[in-house]
Length: 115
Length: 112
Image 1: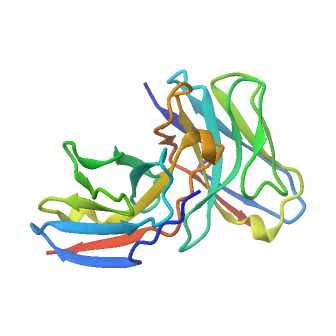
Image 2: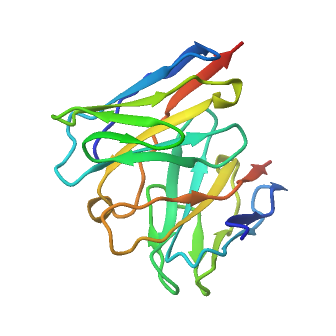
């Protein structure tokens, strides 16, 4: 049981390049999330998904796209990277669709630098 | 989402009890209070969650007064490995749209 894994761990891009970050979870969770964390800041939600085939915008969605084609995977795409997207990206998943509370399980993060 | 206020940083010596208080004056009736811990270069990790009174697990205790406008995370006998950022979150999943407002958290430094 690996929990939540993220690929890659590090990446350096040039402005205008594109890339996809992969998040995978093996806990059969319904919900998945993408956050970004900038130095000295808390986490900000980019996009999330409440089930396979569904996605929704979070607090800071501009410049990112996501897809949830399989329940266990949640992809975050940057079509044209900008230096402002330099950040650490965290993926998380959670299970409890029926309750009022939830516990999110986080991956180890992807450190992205855009030059 | 209810706004939370917690100290930016705290220092402690090994073996001491650490109490981190979070203010959430506009907490709603259905809101739960959740604390996460984040070590450097890692994702946040769930510590404890509660609605009212006191909750205790193997890691920490959470004290919530009757008016629920604040909460206190208590870490007994901290060690160096408890150095981390601690986030207080308040919300109800149905109302928050599944978004968690992590804020900047409290950076705890434990020294020998």
